[in-house]
Length: 232
Image 1 (cartoon, one colour):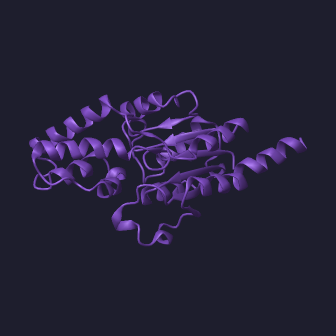
Image 2 (tube, one colour):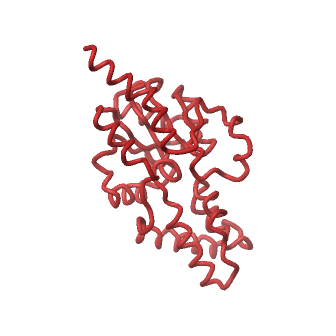
Image 3 (tube, helix red, strand yellow):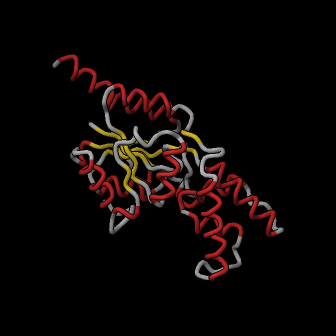
């Protein structure tokens, strides 16, 4: 394995706290019951529409009023994108070890590019990230494998030599269909309807913490790379 690709929200970066803050503020403005933080966390990977629907369940998602609330949510989030957001605990040393071994890492996400770039910039990850593939870059997003092929192409590494880490079935489906080695990040924002049987996702590996992920990557990428350098 020669490169690591991550999903963004819930896999590489713990963004839930900012979404929770904004959505619960929207609940207060509306005067309704405050949506539980854990419930919001399970909807992060489903996107802005699913999260805003938690506050406005009575509105159709195509209703202009709902769309206005969704846009307001995105605007507020975009203006305050990393107030309580950071890499998952343990991810900094993981990335640093990858970089020290000159193993490229990148991101394949369904998050819009303007938000993804703003988030990476806020966390000083822009220059460190070898590739960023967003919905605007492809004709079909995850679970289609097209974004995976593009990411591998952009870093000049064969798809079968890449690992993809994600916290949603579409991540695993996209990685598997692209013939990548797939890792299910069970520490992430697992959707309620899929979390009872993680083996049904058919990932090559399941990790429950970033520490476990780090150990797996040491076995698959970091240690083999070190041995290869020493022997050459």
